[in-house]
Image (cartoon, rainbow, N blue to C red; front, side, top):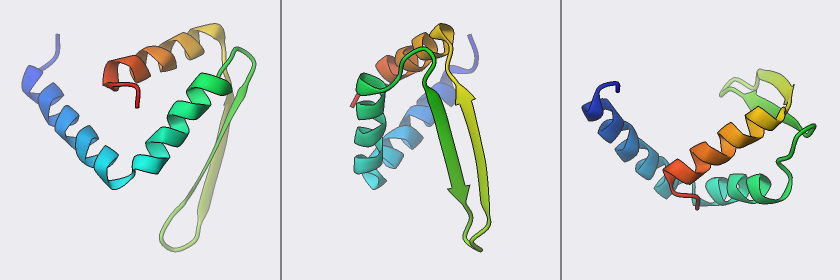
Length: 78
């Protein structure tokens, strides 16, 4: 196991993120429940403060879906 103190710090940071962005995490939870399946494509675009964008995507495997659902379960589901 890694450093337990780091895990506690990460949990606190996650809880603060959840407080700042509750709709975003509910959106991710909805996606997990309704759209995440093998063969689905996860498509992400991030735009920085200057307006530059970076885009990427990944076609999900069954293992990817299982991993992402487990992460969601571990962090509390929302």
